[in-house]
Image (tube, rainbow, N blue to C red; front, side, top):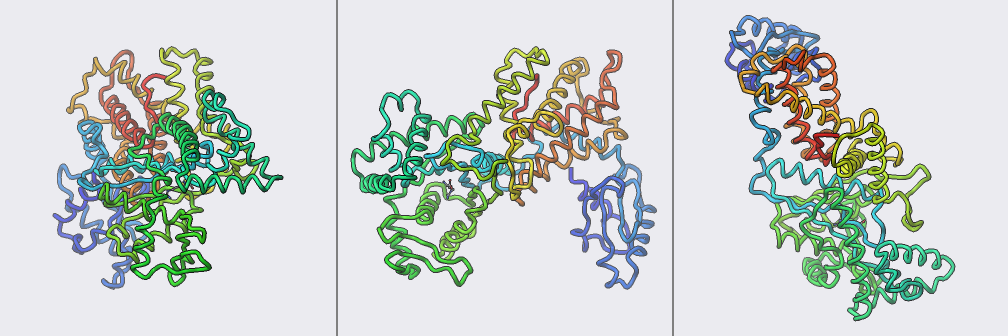
Length: 569
Ligand code: ARG
């Protein structure tokens, strides 16, 4: 429910010292309950009206208080230090909110805002030569959450995993395979065998420079379409891609397209021609560049002197391909902040090329992870791997459930859902720009403010409803005496849910939603401690409505932030 506009509607029907319609934008929702529900700062009017701010607030407050009608949503107005604070009638407000949630159910928090529009999201997009590690977590989860948020707002979404299936790493792997590998082992152990070879290559290359030269030659062969080179690299790529897809699936991230960088290697000429025609391309020591220094963006390398293509060039080809395929209205790219310049550069080039999509490209950048021991280095092999994190999470939750003597029949599935929740929470809990130190124990900590705590709260709602729901038979007339005194803060949090989804989209900041859901969970647990829902076998139907509303909002929210909703745990 839009508390602000309901209040404004009533104010507009009153005769007040100022015309509310002229100042609508200045009315805001109060941050805390003590200052009412809607607040209006009077300072900006003081100059214009030549009256002290608090005097304006006082005049408004007394005028409003005189005109409050029966059944109004406004309880009273107060002037405090230049602010006009308006209090809503708790009972009316609480009732309207709960009614809305229970009527809309899964549609609570859904909008038509971008109906008919398409968004392309490029996320996860890992380089296949490496295991997926903690450094790939945020792109995968933040990307997934942004996709869910876009769908919530009516968009048609296209998720693309633009895998890094191109480049010298694959030359290295071929060299390593030919020197130290064998087919059976790779067929049997798959990615693990390939990874071992890659690590071995890097170790050996440290004291044998000729290996790198060999790898470069094999990479050239891949590029030139040499049969053996293509076959070997495709084989390795498919293995690695399969593993990445498996892991993404486990985490709940499914993609509509896996068209990776490699696809564009032989589709670069049109990009280069177009840059040339528009007079943007310059020669620089044999290489081709676009000079962006006048925009403070340095120089963007388009083609190396040996003719090989570059990351930016492939992105330019890929975005055009996506536009041709999906006619997107907006495109989001989710990577760590280290790629800021890269995206700024080629976005600018799209603008200089007058591309119709130039203004609709967004880079969503997030801070990087490091380990308590320092930087993550995949050259060192198995550091902070996502598959290990997932496995550790599953083991831990299984152990906790056993310890607590769980009665759930599908303990295995539940342990996995708990692990996925904890991992998603890890990726979303801070503002996205923050650099984070990853600590396995900490991220799998199940006490305090954690995903399992939220999931447990949801399960509690489900069990209360199951125990009492049927005999109570929830009907709309029960909202009338909703427990507004005790449940007010909780119910107001529920009301923030739809707007928070919009805020996440506008600010590209998923932590806003996860924080709201956490607040709802802890406020609910307070409510549950202080209020009887079933007393001596008698169900308090009003409180039960609140439980049901909380359950609906948590469920809708969990879906967005990739925390599985578990009814029994
Ligand atoms: N594969 C790249 C990396 O791991 C990220 C790709 C991001 N997407 C893009 N269109 N450039 O750094």
